[in-house]
Length: 317
Image (cartoon, rainbow, N blue to C red):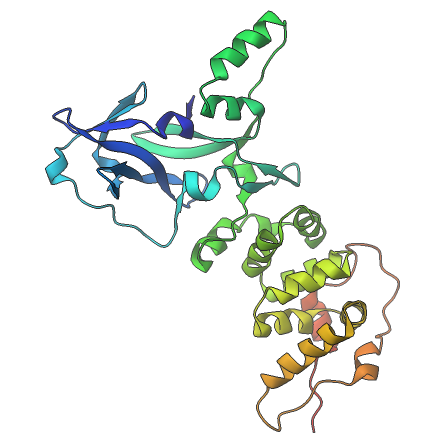
């Protein structure tokens, strides 16, 4: 098996066996079903450079050989859909789509297929951590002495969704394609396990209707409010408008009064002069005649919009 830890820190030499630097990171382009390694981040001579993966000839025993001389190296052409594996995926949280759970990345499994290096799996076990610090062999021997197995804990990349809060919207949309296909109740369960920054990243990648349905599935009003506060005013307002009126009323009622008033004032400030106004407190608290529904059994936002249900709909002045 090939892992990211096999490359990180590896010495890089050119075709003349002159030292070029050490591998700092690998770059992949997000693609289905497996991301493709497209570049190498090198550190050497007090500078960081990026090189195209196509110049790699071979790698073995923590040494990576290039096909060309250092003087002929060309910078790697970066794209908006790239991710740096060590900096942006390693040690970060991801979603195990099969288990509907949040796990931590301890190492990344790679595989070479027809000359192309692919990101094919995620190591979430203690063995991955031991491998990164050079203690995997010691761990295997210790497990053998104790008569115990020490299995790999790998998840196929096809079954995971990275949770990133520090990447562009282009990367985010690509990365969360699988997550967005889950039922809102499942997304809500996953969001409960994430940090505030990563919750925001997930909601930023969902469309308004899916975000509204997911927000309704979150049981804690404080978490709902925290998610909305981290979004820009226009996006948060679009999500609120797609929610059921009783859900919005409960959300605003459970928020500190000052915070709720700030939301109303901030949204009203975005309206053209004379266009309309927000409902007063009685209007916000007015309930729609919903039947009693269990978790995950409410109509989707699109259906609610077709029915004319919108607590945030403007009144004509």
